[in-house]
Image (tube, rainbow, N blue to C red; front, top):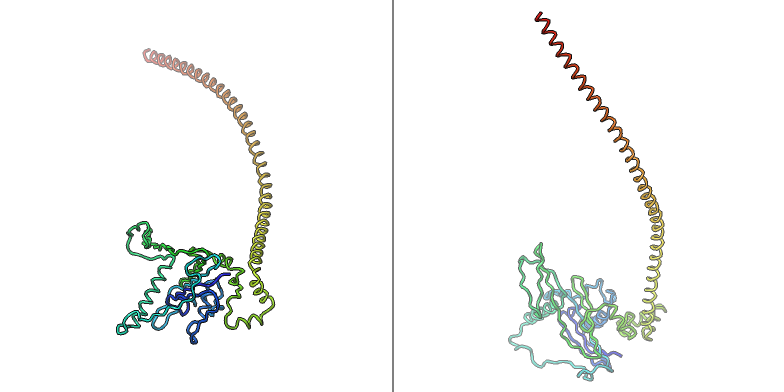
Length: 368
C-alpha cells in the first residue's frame, strides 16, 4: 500500500505561490479553514495530478480554469503544476520514513516589523512564481531582430539559441535538467498545464504519458474510478448511482480493474488487428485482380512485340528486294542514257560536218 508523503502545488486554482504539504501517511490528517480558503482545491489538486480529465469534476468549465486566474493585486500565472509524492513503506529507505507530520512555525518574522511591506512581499512571491513557471516551460519561439546568436557552451544551464535563416526567427529551447534524486520506493508524479494549451506528465522527473500513470496506480484505488478520493456529495452520488457505476468502484477496490483494462486494451488491439487483416485481404484481392489484368496486358504486349519484330523482318526483305530492283532499273536507265548520249554526239558531228560542207559550197557559189 502506498502512503502519501508530500504534495506541492504551484499556480493551481487559489494556490498562486508554491505551497508544500507534508503528510505522515498514517492516521488522519485534517485540513481546517474557513469557507473559501481552498480546502477543496487540495483534493482537486490530488485528483488532477493523478490524471483527472473532466473539468466538471474539478468544478470548472474548461481545463484552463485550474490555472490561477489572478486577482486585483496579482497577475494570472501561466502554468499550473502539482507534484504528488508517494512512498512504499516496505521498500522506501529514506531518513524521513518514520518521521511524524511536521508543521513549520516561524517564531520570527522574515524581516523586521518596521521594514515590513506587504506589497513588496507579494511582488517577490510573484517574481518567484514567474521564475518557476519560466523554468518549467518546455520551450518557446521568439522573434528576434538580431541575426547573430552567440553559441552556448556544453553544460551551460541556459537557453540554446538556434539561428534560422530566412525571416529572422530564433528558436530558443530551454534545457531542463532534473537534478532531484529519487530513492527506492518513492514515486513522484508531476502534472503541468500551460495557458498556451501545452501539458505534460512526469514520473520521477521523466516525461511520460497519461496512460503510464493510470497503469501505475490502477488497482490501488487511485485509478480513473478512484475510491480513495471522496469529495462532498460523493457518497450520496455513489449510493444513488446505477448498479453498473457502483460495480466499477467495487471492482477498483477489489483490484481487478487493472486486469479488465488490460483485457479491454488487448481486445481493442485484437479488433484493430482484425480490421487491419481485413484491409490487407481487400488490398490483396484488389492487387490480385490488377495482377491478372496486368498479365493479360503483358501477354498482349509480348504478342505485339513479336508481331512487330516479324513485321520489321519482312519489311526489311521487301525493302531489300525493292532496292535491288531499283538498282537494276537504274543500271538499265544509265545504259540507255549512255547510248542516247553517244547517238546524240554522233548526230551532232554529222550536223556539224553538213554545216561545214554547206558553208564551203556557199563560198564557191559566191566565187562563181
